[in-house]
Image (cartoon, rainbow, N blue to C red; front, side):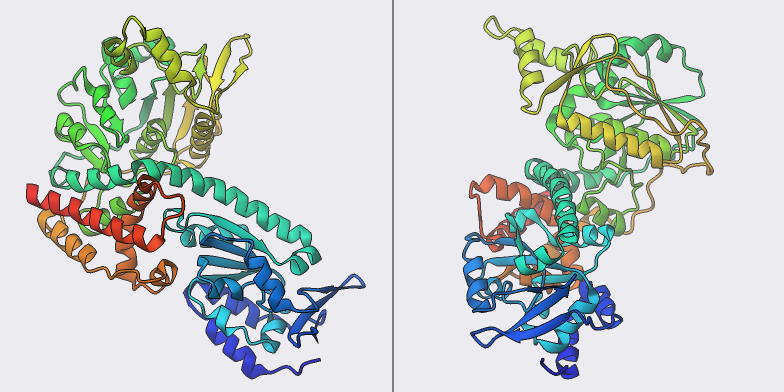
Length: 558
C-alpha cells in the first residue's frame, strides 16, 4: 500500500485550482479520504486503484498494462472533438487524448469526493488536472453540470461529442453514472436544437444587429405600464376569435404577432402594437398591408433592417443573442425580452408581462395544423402562394408541400374527432410557452380553438408588481464610436494557433466577451464550409474575418 504523500496532494490541488474547477477543488479538500480504495501495481509496474464495494473488489484499470489499455481505447475515437470522460481513475484512459491532439475540449465527471481525494493523495495527476482544455467536476448537482456543459461545449467549433466511460469505474457505480449519462443526453438535445438554429441564422443575426444599430439609436416615446393585454397568434383558430377581438374594451392592449397583423387588418381590427423577432427577409411580407400610423412595432435587434425601415419609429429590444447583450451593455440599455421560446408568440407574451399586464388573453396559438391548415386566412402565406402558383403547381399543392415538408410530422384526433397535425418544433414551442406562463408575473389565459390545448397560469395567480415602462436608455456613446471600438477589438483578437480549446480557455475576460458575440456566426460558417469535421482554428479565423467585414460595411454606410 503506497504511503500517503501530501506533497503530491497539494501539487494536484494546485493544478486543479483554475476558475471553473474551484468548487470541485473545495469539495475534494473538505472530503475525508475513502477507506474503500487501495492501490496495487499492475504487471507493467503502474499503480492501479481498486475499490471495495459490498464485499467485492473492483479494479478501475487493467491489472496487466493500464497504459496500453488506455491507448487502445483512445484509438476507437478517430475524430477530433469534445470528450466527456466518465471517471478519472489513475488517468490512463485520459492521457492518450491529451497526447494525440484528438481533444479539443472536454469534461471529466466523477463521484465520491472522498475517493477522489485518496486518488490525489497517492497519484501525480497534475498533467491532466492542469490541462486547460479539461474541466473536472465531482459530485455535481444537475444544475451545476448543466452550467458547465453549456459553457464548455461549443458545437460550432468542437463538432462531435463523444462519451468515454472508464469501464472499471462506471460498472462499479452504474446507477449514478447512468443518471449522469441521461442528463448529458438531455442537455445535448437542447444544445443540438440551439446549434441547428444558429447554423442557419447565425450570420443573419450578426449582420442584422450591426446594420440596425444606427436606426436603433433613435428616440421613441415610452410605452406602459398596462393592465390588460391580448396577444394574437396567426393559427387557424384566430378566425374563430374575430368577434371577441372586435368587441375588446378600450383599455385592453392588443399585441399582434407580425404573422397575425394582416389577418387583423383584413377584418378591420387595429392592434395596439405589433411584435416581430424573425431575422429572415420574409418577415417583410407580414407588413405588406402596411402598418397603420401610430402603431408601435417592437423589433428584436436582429430583425431585418428592411422591416425596421418599413416600421419607422421601431421599439428595439434585446434578446438572448450574445451580440445583442453586448450592445445593451456598451451602447444603449435596450429592454430585454424573453425570446427563448423560439417563436414570436412566446416573445409577445413576454412583452405583455414586461409591460405589467395583470392578465394576458391568448388567441390563435394552435401550435399545430388543425385539419391540415397552417395559418389563419389573410396571413402572409396566402398572397405569397397566390403569386407563386401555376397550372402545374396550384396553391393547394404549395400549401400541401409547406405542411408536409417537416419529416417529424405526426397527427392526432381532438375530442370531437377532428384531425390536427403536429411537429416536434411545434410541440417544443407549446411546452416553452407553458413554462413561461407558469413563471411570469402575469396570468396567461389561452383561448383554445381547434389547436393543441395549452396549459395557462394558475387561476389564482395575481401579479405583485406594476410592470415596467418600455423605453431604451440613453446612448453611452455614438453608434460610430461603438462600431469603431468593436471593429478594433475584433481585429485585435489573436489567432488561435494549434488548439482552439487551449486558446479559448486562456482568453482574458474582454477577449472572451468579443468571441462570444461572434460564435453564433461561426455555426453558420461551419455549416456552409461543407466539411463534416473542419478544424476549429480555421472556423475561428474565418468567423473573425467575416464579422470584421460586416462591421466595416456598417461603418462605411454611416
